[in-house]
Length: 478
Ligand SMILES: *[C@@H]1O[C@H](CO)[C@@H](O)[C@H](O)[C@H]1NC(C)=O
Ligand SMILES: *[C@@H]1O[C@H](CO)[C@@H](O)[C@H](O)[C@H]1NC(C)=O
Ligand SMILES: *[C@@H]1O[C@H](CO)[C@@H](O)[C@H](O)[C@H]1NC(C)=O
Ligand SMILES: *[C@@H]1O[C@H](CO)[C@@H](O)[C@H](O)[C@H]1NC(C)=O
Ligand SMILES: *[C@@H]1O[C@H](CO)[C@@H](O)[C@H](O)[C@H]1NC(C)=O
Ligand SMILES: *[C@@H]1O[C@H](CO)[C@@H](O)[C@H](O)[C@H]1NC(C)=O
Image 1 (cartoon, helix red, strand yellow):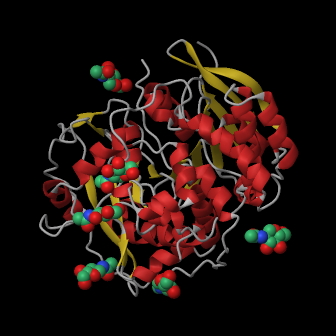
Image 2 (cartoon, rainbow, N blue to C red):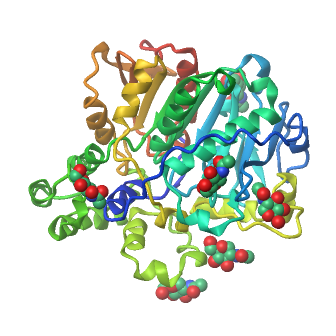
């Protein structure tokens, strides 16, 4: 039943570790310019009609660029799939992957929840019967600039990337996208994502919520959905260590040592050499297995892609750390092959098919140069909860990277009253996982799923997504 893809993302936790030793650029939310009204009416110019290897589809899909900053020449790439049936009656859902630096097209759309999944030959696509566009109109965004096909004409923009920058551009994207697709402007809107998007999603939701005070900018945001999300650095780190120990990845001795020497509440946890070394042991253990999915096998097909063989990679401890986290080229390289094809880039309105864009599934430069990361989403959660937004958080329980413990520790700091105690939820007569409802938030686990839940549990993920959109608890009986 479970389709096990040996897919891995950037090691997002490590990012949080590294950022603490970097200068934090303080950037304020920039005002939405609102001046860009020169976009074509209707998204029809972006209609995708001749995507190579695409299976038959009864719905329309669109791809292309939306300018988010005219001054600097920044444009974000999107791929939008209308719902399989009755798109006019279904909500709009924006999906974001993390990294930072990873592509929502390469992961979300073509490996997880989109209607066309990549085949291993890098040439064809197969229909995904559990695509989330059964339930919603699905919008995948490559964000921020530097990710996938998204770009800036001003290279200095790549030196100032961070959470705020990303949220601002994504916000501008939405408004300008609505000019292309005016029928979605007042549609019920949700934002979903996983991993480092655990930060992007609430941050964008907060920005929308704040800007909504101006009725002319109103976006009909109803809720957010987060999968194995980075939430609160201190709790995420403790959960990471506790999970490695409780899943027999490290010894009691190493565990005790880490708990003794590391100051997890510090914004500089890993600057302590002893702590750093002890944590290195976790990474070394994980290096031999798949940290994103503890009980599945690793990919031996091929060594790291030649592009990543830079001097920087070999000499940078950041790189070392991340590679230990297990970036796996097996599946990702098929995506690289596919999205660098001239006919594919032409079909998706990326290029004319002659001068090509250089697509990669994750951009290491974006990751390495990330300037600003918020240490905790908890204050934003509180704000969104009091605003009455629906917040659902789910966790694949075999992920070692952003483990279920990290998420539980993070959420417990919210101290929310429990409205429905811990119970099983079911799909196809089996226990899919467990869930608990709080005042303002629902938390659920996916039993036996790794970091990228829909890859492991496509059918129950779709059912869960449907429950989320309805605002109804997933089935608690067989
Ligand atoms: C465009 O981006 C630059 C650099 O990030 C910023 O200073 C400027 O305010 C942006 N312009 C608009 C209209 O948002
Ligand atoms: C970036 O520069 C290219 C080449 O001048 C231009 O065609 C393109 O429209 C610019 N992009 C944006 C978003 O302004
Ligand atoms: C695809 O999903 C639909 C709706 O859930 C279902 O009716 C159909 O049987 C599925 N088809 C296959 C081949 O699994
Ligand atoms: C760490 O936190 C302290 C106290 O909140 C603050 O003064 C310091 O600037 C922070 N350091 C970094 C690197 O963020
Ligand atoms: C990458 O590095 C490995 C190990 O140093 C080396 O064997 C390999 O030839 C390098 N590949 C390229 C394309 O430079
Ligand atoms: C594409 O980008 C990679 C780095 O991500 C670089 O090594 C490679 O040379 C680039 N290829 C082209 C054709 O520009």
